[in-house]
Length: 246
Image 1 (cartoon, rainbow, N blue to C red):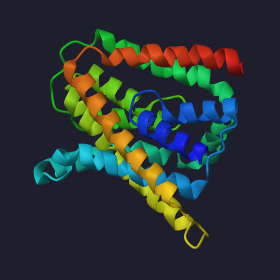
Image 2 (image 1 turned 90 degrees about the vertical axis):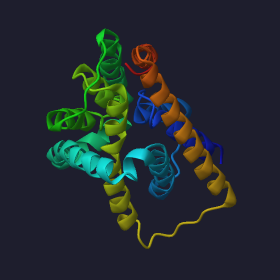
Image 3 (image 1 turned 30 degrees about the vertical axis):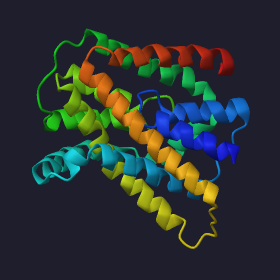
Image 4 (image 1 turned 60 degrees about the vertical axis):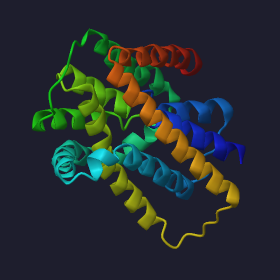
């Protein structure tokens, strides 16, 4: 049960903050022998994080004009993911090798720290922005590269406004994430699964922490100038993982 609670908290916080949830889970797995409860449970918790995005972005999702604008951009952003489908097994193998973490966390740090030099971005995203963000989202399939960190950073460098960068980053996450959720759910069809009342508590915790993390990140971006500070944290993780795994 402790492993499930820890997994829920880690997923709820790091799934959305620009610090790489996958990198944290790989570190926890190798440092403390954390065994994830299995594919079904990951899908179960994934539904909580998806719902948290829908709640926070409800102003963009349940507004018809905004819905179609973001849907078109997110489809473009999802296209690069198809290019890496043939390499799925190689990407999955990186999750069993923590030696990649010093380099991927360092990559995330460079992107985050570089936003310190961004000044007064303020325009709406276009097709080119969505495609470039999609390319960085594909890189974030590797543990240690933050999906939100890389996509928001590149959007800010392209002078997209902070709130638009935030909204598109998580909007484009929805179709890719929902697609993987459905595929995994289909694959697990017929498998024997059981949930306890404690699992419902973990689900609610994951959802609540996810909502709070998204609100916190949106607030940081709206204040301007502090997003780069997450790079200090990931740089620390890069150095720590170098000592631990190299």
